[in-house]
Length: 211
Image (cartoon, rainbow, N blue to C red; front, side):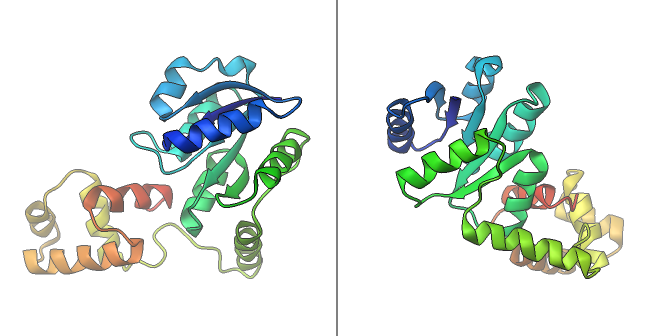
């Protein structure tokens, strides 16, 4: 099984490379600290599995998975991350990940998960599997989250205009509300997205399909 690794923590990247290269039947085809380097240098046709962190600088792990799957559908993608955020989990799965493993598992658990993935399975950490089950149960019950759920209509209007690049003043003028009201809406949007900056909020909103 040929594995490519993308992880921005250089020490962890090297440890993963050594671990997998030392496993019988495993060949590491590349180990990169960013999605940009991986996409420009990796010989994807020779790769069976992509093991990718999601919180990468620049191009995110979710976008990396999406691009790799579009280029080489045969590659099995495994998210390897600390993120348990529900929106991130489903963004990765939607992008094409067939496995989702939380960091902190043992080396043997990681290797077994990779073999499982290679053999057609969909390995997930127990916490992640429970989130997937809950999502399925909600969808069966008719309460599947829809784009923008959790935001008021006005908050969705504000978010969409921020996505278009409008300034806070322009948003207020377009919607006919005061700058103070715009700031109040944005503050609530940030809270709901658990974000502290505009770029972070927009990134999470895109992952959730809200914009």
